Amino acid sequence: MPYAKIIGSGGYLPPRVVTNDELAAELATRQIETSDTWITERTGIRQRHIAETGVTTSQLATKAAQQALQDAGVSATELDLIIVATSTPDFIFPSVACMVQAQLGNHGAAAFDVQAVCSGFVYALSTADAFIRAGRARTALVIGAEVFSGILDWNDRSTCVLFGDGAGAVVLRASEEPGIIETDLSADGSQMKILHAAGNVVGGQVTGDPFLRMDGQAVFKLAVTSLAASAHAVCERAGISLEDIDWMVPHQANVRIINFLGRRLGLSDDKVVITVDHHANTSAASVPLALDAARRDGRIKQGDLVLMQGVGGGFTWGSVLARM
Ligand code: UT7
Image 1 (tube, rainbow, N blue to C red):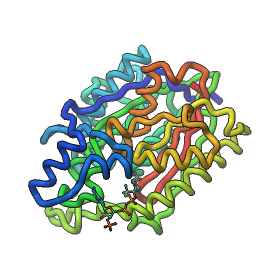
Image 2: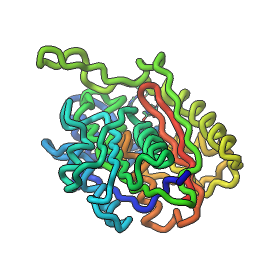
Image 3: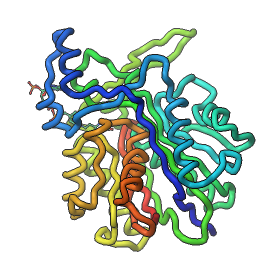
């Protein structure tokens, strides 16, 4: 049974950077009080990238995909599977994956979206791994992409300061050598209310509340416990000790969650990739963006053992353990 090996990665952030100070000044014009100090101390976020009005998830996804394909030395025509993780698709349908396929110039690959919010990339990567292991695909493109700025209530300071837009991508290829070693996915739908965007389209009209709502403290607590359990589960099934992990690439939501988790797992800070300061929480894009950043700056090298983790709305969480 072949392994799925990551052979390339890419990332794309829209050019417009909004610093905490700029955001605080903008919110102040509407009598909403926040500050760089509050945001930095509570989250580690210093800035976010925000897409211009009209820029869509498929456009960001395509740019990240092109970089990943170039990095892998793979042509779009070689892909036989395209999976996009997103909660902010361009349209109700077609899927973002089909739009990316068209923009890349691929014909015939299976293409579909995965919706697991901030765990989306880990869910999509695990799905692509299963396809490749089963011999149903040989070369896969997996993307996490979001324009989260479009579902934020910019009058709610408890959420709007936390998120940003972006896309990250990897190319996978069937290989005799590992590769993705083990994956672990979980969900608990009974916790849906702690993080949701409960809007709907009925009769052509948006009904309900289309903006993201979150009980931050409940998410914080569940994120730490579920990710710690998932890290132990995936390592145990792989017969690998947590000490053997070279790099942890966690969901980039909050540096306090990441540090807390790293300490609980006994991983030293220098083994943990952090990019949330630079691009805030980009939901499904955050893990592939962090992975790509650490591959490009030379931290993550060929042969390294990497633990990727996602957590978010649903409630969903999961891990992918991969040999690079
Ligand atoms: O992808 C997964 C999605 N989300 C997450 O992972 C988020 C998980 N949760 C968190 O990261 C944290 O809970 C937050 C960063 C969201 C909040 O941090 P916290 O330490 O839990 O703060 P809090 O919600 O307890 O709020 C503390 C205070 C409150 O004021 P009072 O009641 O103490 O007077 C808030 O109203 O901070 C206030 N506050 C703010 N103040 C300035 C909330 N948002 C802001 C803000 N600026 N932007």
